[in-house]
Image (cartoon, rainbow, N blue to C red; front, side):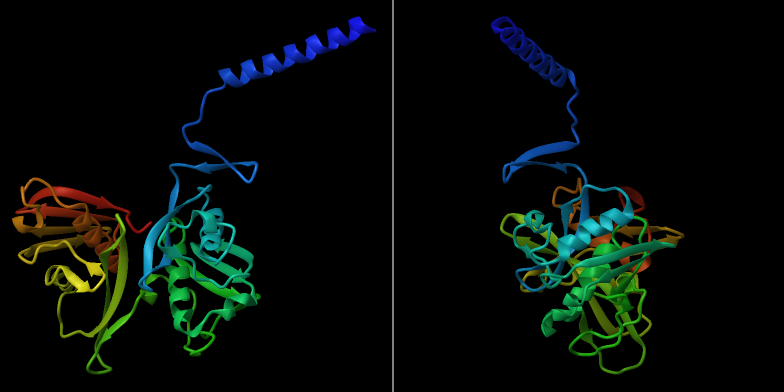
Length: 318
């Protein structure tokens, strides 16, 4: 009897050592980060991030990123939407200084993706949004979901019915919508005719981190070129508002440009370069690239200095 017990113990120990040996031989995956949380093992993709638009401390709907576990657009949309829900499943990965905007308790009842149009069905808890944030919530949903590769437009439903009005102001909304809906809207109008809109991305600082805030401005267009308007907007002053900045030098001149299919070429003078005239600041790359890609739906923005290419920007908005 004693011999059988010892034999069994030896077999168990041998099998355990063999299992450990197999684990040791297995290759490590560079794509996964393992973390112990609440005594359970979780994994996250360390190099897969998705753009999401959240509220910053200044009340702007701002562009940032969260980790995602999915590459499929529909599953990624589910991940991103969860990140937009206050106290939702993804609240632990919201970057510091940002907060979600969809009311707590809102459930995702369904997602359907067809012809690059995503229809998202949410519970009636969505309507519990406070009045000052109701339009910002719609902006955050539209901008976040249309930043996913494979999703061009979004339709928002509540309990299976397409949302037609904002809950408090009763402002009409027509779906499906894309980024033309606008974000952080500012109005500089003198008449109700010849209204033009454009969106410009600015830099904002949060502690030691920088992120980008889009502002959609509505003006009475007097035949001005929108590309030049955007460049002028970014270069006329280093500060748009107290917390929003642009690093484009006031002496920058857009000499000429060309727009062909999905490619925009911008030719500047040397003032677009940093002080040592050897490189272009990252903040300038992002503010120009994000602004131009959004307003012209281009995939590539090429920056030139005196007709010499210095940088190629691709797919920042997705």
